[in-house]
Image: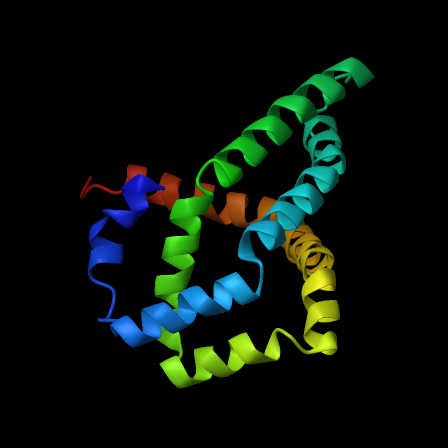
Length: 165
């Protein structure tokens, strides 16, 4: 994450006003960003068991339940560690992203809205909704992967067989 924050892409971000950045930071505080991220990570790692099983079963090999458990534990631990271990940097980056895309006034209004009971319920449901949406999109990507790989292999083969290579 430190590499991202020091990367040219982050450095070339449109100028964000100090007011916008402060408003974004206030919004993240009002959203209880750290707790929200912890819930997102918990939801993410809970779904990884199915993803790991599916990935291992696609290998065509006989898969032991213990291998699934061990692989899942490693993936979950690393996922949790990388996200939660970089939470300060993620918060900073997120504040910059918000400030680059919304006005300080909009961010301030969003921070006020966080006290509304509907927003509190929405924020509580957000991690699960995000996981469900991610699962849908990942299923589409996985389903389309064989066709993409086949086409990619054709392109690579054509390129390697080209006399201009």
